[in-house]
Length: 462
Image (cartoon, rainbow, N blue to C red):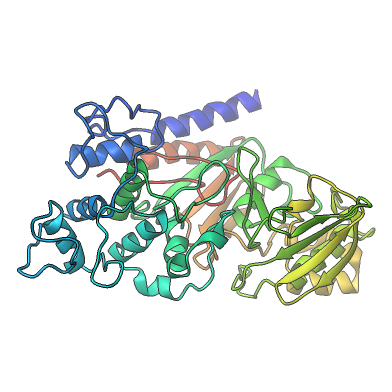
């Protein structure tokens, strides 16, 4: 009965937030059904004549977009007028070309700068990383992007991003920006042409911020979590709550695809960071991203990762599971952010590594008395490195999560807080009812309970 109640509450919440804008179906493209991933964005732009179909009934969402077509989309989306100077800015976009006024307007606004040597290359398909660069300018985040020297895109092909686009691509996938999405293999494909649907999605989000104003999401659970320390708690409610507080070295999509979160890559045979020896033993390299901090401001380093292994393997601690840590034979620290791990034999969990806990918090307790970890206050007041932090906590009733504005992945969509309550308490039911009322003005919500990046994707009604 409790499980049925939980499902019904979840459906009620979704019904409250998945209310489309009445105009978004106006275009009625035959090849853009309501279930298409970018249908809302495409139809919303079409309703305002920012994009048009390739025929009277089709949009051709998977077709590539040229650089001049994209310039026109951006100019119209920003409400700019065509600009036709006497002397063309680009030698390959003369006054006689159909896109002249749009490209010039985009150049005047500072959105495009050409490919060099006075050329714009108007007929070339716009690459996804160039889309990110251009729209980063539209968002006024060029200076911010220039300070980002290493990508934080949570993608398996971050090494394919051009040096000039690292900052823009990082910003493009942040929760509060969302210009680009990943494919089924968790790749961003930076050098591939952007499709018409991808461009519509990106342009829409550039002029309609994913999160505007303060948003609150209330989630109802059957039970209050017994702990916020998964090392010693096997409760599903513990795991769920910590999802919002902690990041992992390697994460997994709902479809089972691994991708780097706190790490810069997923160890694999293909990238050379996983080696399977003839005797059955395995060697992996783990590299943490630079610049990450725990929620108390202390830096995250590979020492935290190595220390966490000691926690897992201590006989004095009531650890829930030691898989695959019990296969480790040796850990060698390479530098501040990297280590090499040696394993007895292969296990499917080896590429994911293990959860990371802060040595500066738990280390002194562990050194003094390893068994004290079993009753550590960390279970109630943890320090993690995730998108949210605990704002308030009333044991047995509810937890309020506030956005961690210093999170290395970018500020979460939910600006104000995420509240999680137990449905068995009167307070819990009150908050569920309030949530439905709060979400009434939200156009739609995509919920991925096991994904830190899109716990809720919110758009304001245009």
